[in-house]
Length: 324
Image (spheres, rainbow, N blue to C red):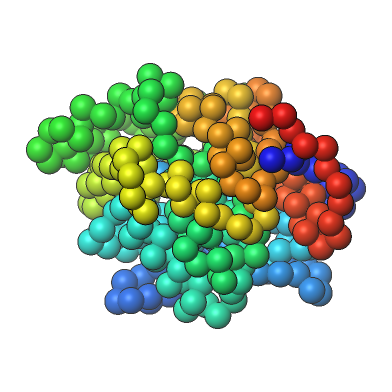
């Protein structure tokens, strides 16, 4: 494990708040996958794929994809059942990883620089471990890799629903009771440590996303089933067998950047350092005072860390080892 390198800030575009990147519907294996494209702004940019977390969407990558467009020709997908993508039949980490693999193959852009946040981080670990031919580098932002003390996560409140038959109905009932603006505020508060870092435009977009969820009859079921699948993967990871996410993380061989926030309220803050220790060719960046979605809260810092990874891979440098 090494310390992450931050690329120079002046290599990034000026500060700004772009609107969400344009999206399109693509039929993949019989269902619609929604993809947002962030076109490269310079020749020689390499392909990148951004994978969001539980309850998120491709919109979560607007700022970071724009900042990196000089180096990365970006695509961000809505996972099945989230954002504008149609639902599917399975909502497990292996099923989502298979979908990401199929998208990379379908797009013909691989290998890609793969970036994942939260659930998207767990999915990306599996893809990088099992299909290294499709991945150039791996960036994990607050990856939802296994931990057992759910007192360290606000998601622990969801655990009782997994034992309730048709728990998704309770989630749907709760969504129907909450005003969309209240829900948007609660989502931001759970994911972001310092809300002053979130612009008014991004707050409006969060509200629009909440309204989109209200209109999707499948959303409550998808959310609960995905959370159940994630918890199941956590439990399996502490048993013997090839399905352990920690075993898969140890099998990752591509250059990897791991970013964690000291104020993460959804994933145990000890997970990011542990991931960096387990993944052989890794770099760690812990951000003080930052929450679960660093790419939204401090996108320039995250972009500089990604630039550092890209520069290091292109021109290897010596980095001080971090004591484990």
